[in-house]
Image (cartoon, rainbow, N blue to C red; front, side, top):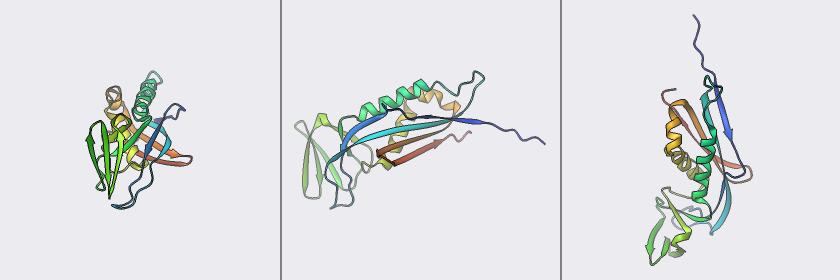
Length: 170
């Protein structure tokens, strides 16, 4: 009896322009946090799919464009977590006020991006960006042909967090 097999190919995208510069501070507890600082974050992505009759897995120009849009949306902002148990966010008179322990940390509203995460860490950013990538209309249209997506976020040389989605119908 012959077993049917499927050969899958993984396309990896890691371009110099897939990056964003952002300020943040990591929250360690209700009383301890890092000082505000920044990183030049990098993003990379690998997509697994079957090669079609035309010799292509999918149009990965679409993937590169979607990844660039995700990076551009975070670039040159202070990133703050909305779901942290240790941080309270308030908007007032054109400011975003981050309340932490006894501190009241003001930012200009235009400089801040509030994210639906618990902490601004690469391990929180990777699944956030993966979810946003999957929700991108052009990527959503390609999902029936994609078996897996792995997205990585780096905050420095040799330091990556990755999140992965796999098709249940694969």
